[in-house]
Length: 292
Ligand SMILES: O=c1ccn([C@H]2C[C@H](O)[C@@H](CO)O2)c(=O)[nH]1
Ligand SMILES: [Zn+2]
Image 1 (cartoon, rainbow, N blue to C red):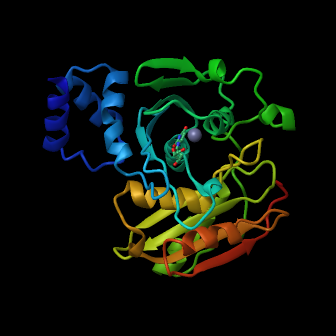
Image 2: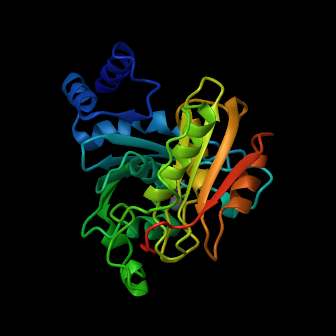
């Protein structure tokens, strides 16, 4: 009954194709469906799951990250045919990466359709929050309950978390002509400066310019355990699919990264090449201020 109400609310307000909800939209849905917050979020997971890309497993996972601002961010798992399994992006990472792109500094809750795996627990631990609630279809937990004796940022001397790091200072402040190309490059540079790379100092950002002129952005989000780190191209492609595009809509692709021991270009270009014939254009920048 309430799920019917949700379906009609989504249709009436044209929300059924969204991948991000404002606090006002959530208030409307809560009022019209009379669902509680967790029940509503669980009921919205199919919208996320349908955006998953699962050529390997066929196993669709959907997640929602609720940001401190009250916005809800969808995420879905993304697998890429032709690459090793380690290239997969998990739904929880996609949802939190989505929140990062909208400059959330705190995640209230993560709602997910299957129990979060160890890799995701480790990824979420990088938020460095004193509390994070995880809501599953039949239960809820605090992250600390699911990851006792955790290894994390503090073990490597980091005091801030994935969404609270200082901004970077890559490259010069440019005032180029406002061509599509320059705007996309600047978007990738902005994402690089907003990225989180305390372990490698390889700040990195991606911008995909689409046929309709829209940009899909991605930023690098590192992890103290290294392997669960989220690459900027993974996040940009996840955004592409969450927004309902297909990879053939990519017209140009840009990566901006800091000169460092670690580099994103090879992995990003390889991932892109499995989905698109577009060549990845690269800019390597030095840090201007002596921040890193
Ligand atoms: O916490 C998890 C566990 C698995 N998956 C995805 C990864 C892969 O695409 C598929 C099978 O593991 O499910 C997630 O998105 N989140
Ligand atoms: Zn996972």
